[in-house]
Amino acid sequence: MEFLLSLYALATLYFLLIVWKWVGAKRDQECYILDYECYKPTDDRMVSTKFCGEVIKRTKNLGLPEYKFLLRAIVSAGLGEQTYAPRIMFSGREDNPTLLDGISEMEEFFEHCIANLLSRSGVSPSEIDVLVVNVAMLSSVPSLSARIINRYKMRDDIKVFNLTAMGCSASLISVDIVKNLFKSYKNLFALVVTSESLSPNWYSGNDKSMILTNCLFRSGGSAILLTNKRAMKNRAMFRLKCLVRTHHGARDESYGCCMQKEDEQGRVGIHLGKTLPKAATRALADNLRQISPKILPVRELVRFIVLTLARKMNRSCSKKTTGAAKTMVNFKTGVDHFCVHTGGKAVIDGIGTSLNLSEYDVEPARMTLHRFGNTSASSIWYVLGYMEAKKRLKKGDKVFMVSFGAGFKCNSCLWEVLRDLGDGNVWKDCIDRYPVKCSDNPYMEKYGWINEEDPSTFKVPDYID
Image (cartoon, rainbow, N blue to C red; front, side, top):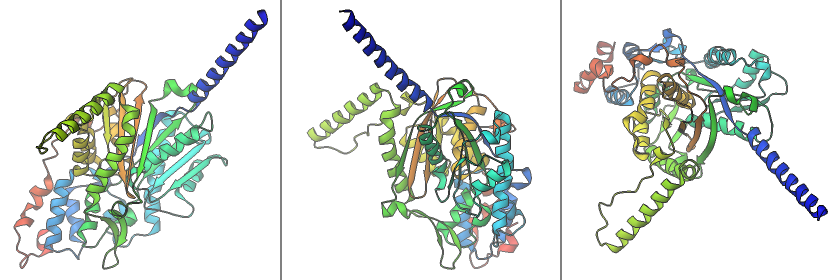
């Protein structure tokens, strides 16, 4: 009898040991954000209405139809007068950029953003175990990641990933790379650096599908410090709950809706096709279908299934199928805040409608677009910064991020806030002025007369100033 009791005791201890090791392993695989930094260029790079007029004026191959299109695009884009452009624009050399222009733009960002982040967090460059850099439209030799390693003298055994051509959703792809590394290695620090080099990518042609990017994209960037160290949990800002990536590159329509190409005159630019909204909607729907069960409570999923089945049964029993209301998932049952990609006013409106969000929910994205423009993959971190500066983020809150990118991709994730947050960050000098009314647009006031012009008498130098 004593032998059996001893055997049972040993078996119980062994089982508890296995459970303890499993729990410990899971804890070592957590992904925390210790801190993040968004880049604010200097004021001499600020894009005013007058400066936009000067840039448009020196684009000699534009006619009245293109000017009308530009005005309509700029007014509807939702950008304000405090966004930033690369230095090459202010020297009037956007038509003939050099490789050094693009590299200098990135190194200015690296110098400011990474240095501030590491200094504030108390983590030295030699402690960084993983470096992930994503800059979609600039590839150099040595790579941008190598330039960071050289600038900050990081270790020679650092794990490095240099991503290009991943588009506006690249920062969540970078986080996913870090998350997967955290599953295999303990006690790591990871640095994610995300930006876009606009210096060599200004489009100076007259193809309307390629002019649009000039109206939306602005200079910016962010650096995020992540870890899976248990000892750092109490210092962490956020914990990653889940992340889902959706890629529709196998579909020709989605693949070709956002593409770098040459126009008929051989000028390189980013083509945004008419199928882009449809591709984005389809990618978002597939992504939400995957992530919803991971982030929503069971009661909401059951409610949605029951109502969907009931609606289908009513439609099958009734001859009148028109006018039936669509059953929607209430994402607010599992999410407190929404970090929506600032791809443009239409993108924000579309996501807001798809998720049934209020104006309060999409306010951070609208104000980020107004203040900083579309800064590509770093946009969602400016949106997160707005929420923090407004003191919206409280311990236990859930933050949902969603972004889109060429390919076509839709990536999303859910973060848990680990402590009350309220740092002013990149917004500290202007947060008191927000929210603003985005409908107040200075471009229409200054250039609205273009819509009344006669093509036969219109002369650019006499009007654009």
